[in-house]
Length: 135
Image (cartoon, rainbow, N blue to C red; front, side, top):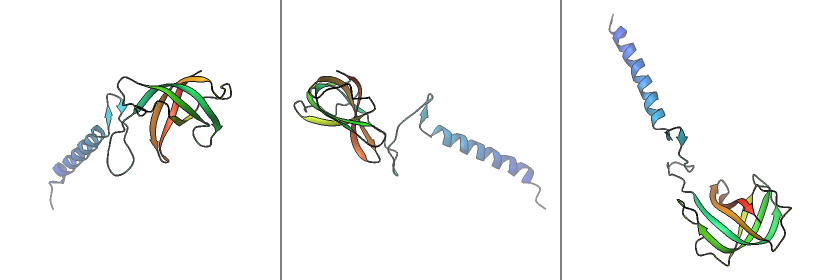
């Protein structure tokens, strides 16, 4: 009978441990942070796009889903956010629709507002999200 199993079994166990450790190192974690990726078969990094927007509130609606409010803002200015591409560059004078978590009943139509607008991609496609809304 073959007696080399005493050497082969520990080597196989070591190979399995190193394989698992190698997969963990390739998982996208780097210094405790995980890089975002899009869903699908490719591992494409998500590019965040943001803009500092000032304008006037055109409409506010209750919405369904993860974001309970939708608002329309007529853009007066769409400034850059350092380190991010601007999804609204050149769109001054246009009206955008953005989703938000902020409670919007204290705002009035026509009121001047400022917000950070973030372009997000989810299962329903690409949409704009307003955060840090002030009026």
